[in-house]
Length: 341
Picture 1 (cartoon, rainbow, N blue to C red):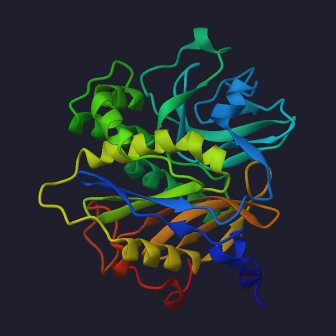
Picture 2: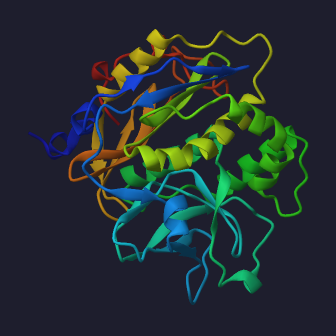
């Protein structure tokens, strides 16, 4: 067995228990399928939002603040999760996490982030703690960041996004929404649309035992989010839906109907059959990445158990042109027919 083969495992093998898919909540062009847990995870952790209420703090680097690094201080007796795409507000500028990170109990850890507020660098707020944002980054931005993280991992570099691309994407998003932010803040795009986003969010409810979501916009799947702990996912569900909804506001007229629950089941089946490559994690656990012509993403395991998973359908020869979003589940070829990259 080659070294690369010995470092590969399917996502299904890392899943603690089977998951089921609930019928979608559909709001205009947005359809969100809830992923329901089959069992409680064995590993214990809390979300950053919960950790923040209990004393977890995220700060700028103490002596020399850096745009693309923050420090998480976890005084609790349980690990705390920072989820990929999660946004934090405050200090010298707003940031989003580049990868999902578990910070162990009683530890402080430097984590990779991207700035989502290009026009502010407020040294007077250097000592401030960051606060959870009411939104996560929208799927278009998260997909762009995830591509660069996987590229970095393939090249044995730290898992980071490309900051310039992040700023360019947020500027383009702001322009499409007619938002002129004094600091180029992604948060301001959400604030301008908050009433609409909140209205959509009220119709996408958290389900009993929900541990993830598969979102489709204009008839095409765009992202899957999975967090193994129900309470941790519950803290993220609202912000993630805000991100889905922001992209849905740009859906074109004449969209395809929402995918069926059979489409969603097939998507999950294909995803769980995907072979993933192990990669070093930031914090405790082990990172995972996968990158095929029609499925790509990253994840995190602890003691062999899947803790987080973020997956994006890719555009390819049998999918829509670049920029039109993801492919429907039925158009995703099984990953077993292709060699991983």
